[in-house]
Length: 79
Image (cartoon, one colour):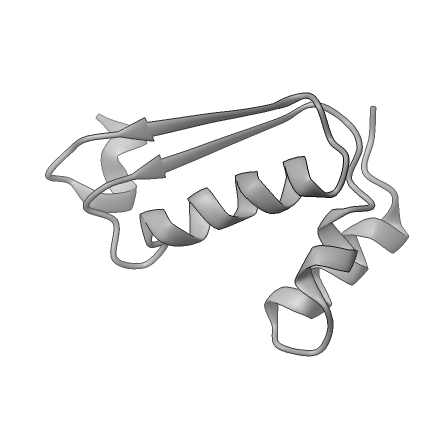
């Protein structure tokens, strides 16, 4: 499943403060993997949890959320 340009634009606009994040994310109905790192400052874990919740609340039943515990912030995936 590919995310439509419309859905991506709506979600991106909402993330930039120009719209309703829940409405934009609700358009994403393909499987989604959300990964958060507890020590990430640039991409706080709370935002990743919220994204996974909003995807599920928007009707997406194929959302997987992983929370990684690491001292290396958002660079954890490089290690």
